[in-house]
Length: 240
Image (cartoon, helix red, strand yellow):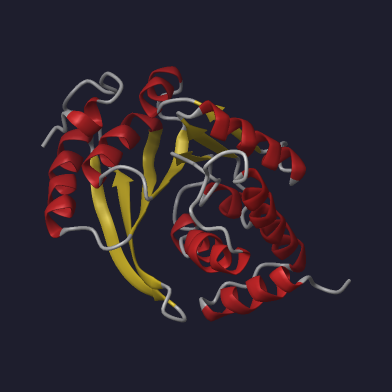
């Protein structure tokens, strides 16, 4: 079957970042972009409205953490602040993990659920209108890996992830160019809540798209303070 123009562009650009999904995965990745841009006409999911920009700035950006995902223990993935489904849906397409996407905005979650059904991923992917703190109380220590892309500062993410992760679980944060002070504060919070920065790596997406930083934290122990705290405290009253 002949590839669509969007599938050709996905194949070409992902090869530049040394990612080679199967033809079936490429088809699903392209369909996800189409679904996002269609839903964006009803709900504000993204400022990116050109499908070729979405290939670079959303899908490829999301899939750059496949190598980090491979280092995490086996088990489900939780995507915090999922928005339009990046990185959670591309990672679900290109891995075999069960995935939960959460967002506090219910109308976004409705669109995500429709996308998951259209992509025929509902056997192992779902979306929920949920806050991380509530999920941490309901399902503690349930997730092998947590992803967070362009949502909250690192100290808040480290705190929110701690009660949700299994021992040795990973928090993978996708950022632009975080300030050194943000990374330092997150390291101090991590000491309190039982996480540790495992590594930090930087990359430049091809064709001048931009600089990215990936920070991977590991759950190494218990928290010295009771978690989760009340909703919003991690962001508005950080531990450090």
